[in-house]
Amino acid sequence: MIKQRLLSSAVIISLLAGVLHLDMHHPLMGVGGLWLMPLLLGLALLATAELVDMLIAGGMSIRKCHVMLAVALVHVLTFVPALFDAILIDGYPAECPVGRLGWAPIGAVLGISWLWVVEMKHYEKPGGVVTRLGASSLVILYTGVALSFLTSLRTFPFPGEASSAWGMVALLSIVIVTKCGDSGAYFMGKTFGKHKMAPRLSPGKTMEGACGAFLAGMAAAVFVGLWLAPALVQMGQGDTTVSIWAWAIYGALITATGMFGDLAESLIKRDMQQKDSSSWLPGLGGVLDILDSITLSVVPAYLFWASGLIGPLN
Image 1 (cartoon, rainbow, N blue to C red):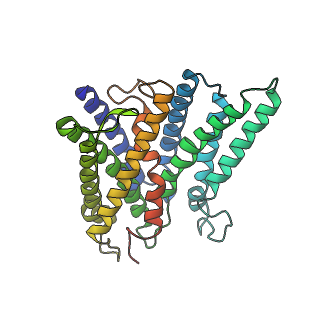
Image 2: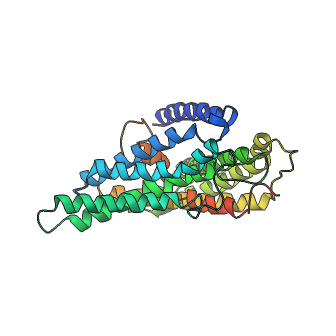
Image 3: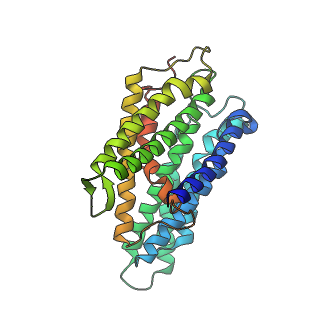
């Protein structure tokens, strides 16, 4: 199991590193984030397909194609500000009433409205419509709106000439912190785990593992702030980072929300009586199993960066 997990992780990290390098050093149309958009859209659709398949396997009736179209719409609309940055000389207009974050909610509303139209068209007899709409809306919010914040984080307009570099640091920070937290929980739990944290949802998770997750996540956040950020941003352009304590608090917050996201997916899997979201990634499960700790932590991460609690000081 460990060998399979390490091999799958190595392949994923290699592919991700290649795309990130391309996006960082050879930005498409001079705008950071455009190379990542097909990747993020693909991951979101794979996660959506896995989640819908789990719900269907658990006995729920969901219109899979329509839900995937709705999730795709959310992510495509989230790309709008970056596309405007690439096309317009002055970039995305700051006075736009939708702002940079408003596109994802618009996509969600349009997508859910489309599902209502589909249900109205195919309605035959009472029973199942409300449950189907509720489950479909949950999927759109979970793999659509929540994951769309990864794009918003990468393309956030940080002040200064190093805005794109800071966007890359912000994106990498959540991936590094959550995955280091997952690894810390796994190895600490395997070595010292005795006290179960949520035995009904995830029997393998322990309080000792949670402590390992916090230690690893906070250490990873400090690494990002003190070493990775200066390397990518190339300090000397007037940018600097905040204190080590701010990065440690950021690491603790992202680790906590990452564990919550992990348990949230476990709740869905247990309720649908599924072990993994899929089995096509040996040792890791499916895409949703990889993204579970990121999905619900990316929103607080975005708020942390957007508020200026960490990042450039200008």
